[in-house]
Length: 132
Image (cartoon, rainbow, N blue to C red):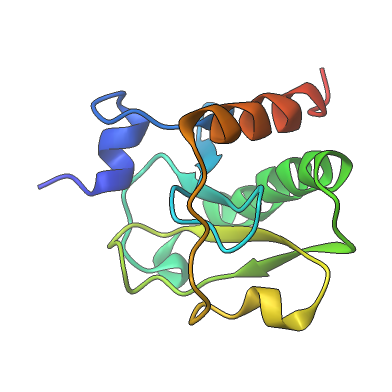
């Protein structure tokens, strides 16, 4: 059975897409810790990030860097942090979380509830800051 991320990549479940390449896909987390919280995944479904082939693993981080730089330009934050938890969905993924204080990176915090319009506006703003 396909993971929810594979269904998002395949267009079976809607998302707020940020970026896509041949091998990777980035989209807003629908239960974000902060505005602009983005998930970056390889298109190939592999459960554990450290099981990715070296080239795919390295590429995932390079793709994440491009997305993180766009987030940094789009969201009021001091930094964009990364987290790899990987227990909630059996599909390797990196969380890119804009933050101003360390507490904002705490996954125990309540998640933001943003309207569809707010989510789309955030996604559009981040996309506008991606390199051409």
